[in-house]
Length: 226
Ligand SMILES: Nc1ncnc2c1ncn2[C@@H]1O[C@H](COP(=O)(O)OP(=O)(O)OP(=O)(O)O)[C@@H](O)[C@H]1O
Image (tube, rainbow, N blue to C red; front, side):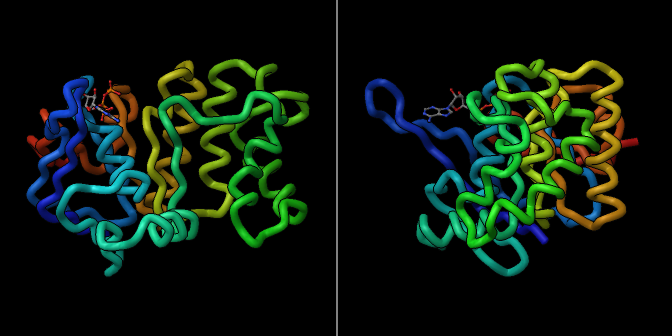
């Protein structure tokens, strides 16, 4: 499903010189498995996730999802592709503090032809499934862990084929973390979704079907989890 080839991503430093953050030869991955990406801080995990989602343009290379090379698309076409195929859960959530939890989950509908009304029941069901109190007036009334689960619910609003999640259990206690891990596994194994998760959490790594290790922008190992 994912076929990545010769991908390089560079950024500019303060002196405007380019430095390389990702330099990947080849990576393939299939839907139906929980894939976990690990690596030390600064190794490029979030950058890779953003490149895979089409949020970040690559300097060169191919990122082919089911035959569509998103690296070859214009920015607008990449945005449309992401809207139609990807649920993205950011490390720092990117939620809107002034909106209710329910309205936060419905934010992706703003950018589609779907009206929020018919989606409200799904949004409420997702929040209930994740144990988030949907009746709070504003997101700022929620705990950090509840916000994290709100971000997960939002990523699932359109039942995406591809779920990319950056540290989805980082703010959760063991019980809430276990719930999120269970949902990630079910999405991959039962629903056949492509699920890629950046995580350092030993419980997430133990639950993985496949673990990728990123080191200084290279995939250093690609091992099956036990
Ligand atoms: N927009 C940017 N401009 C310049 N440098 C950047 C930019 N985004 C990321 N970097 C740098 O790229 C490197 C990789 O960053 P990235 O966020 O992908 O790492 P990470 O593995 O996700 O780290 P962490 O585990 O700490 O979240 C870091 O050295 C970071 O400073």
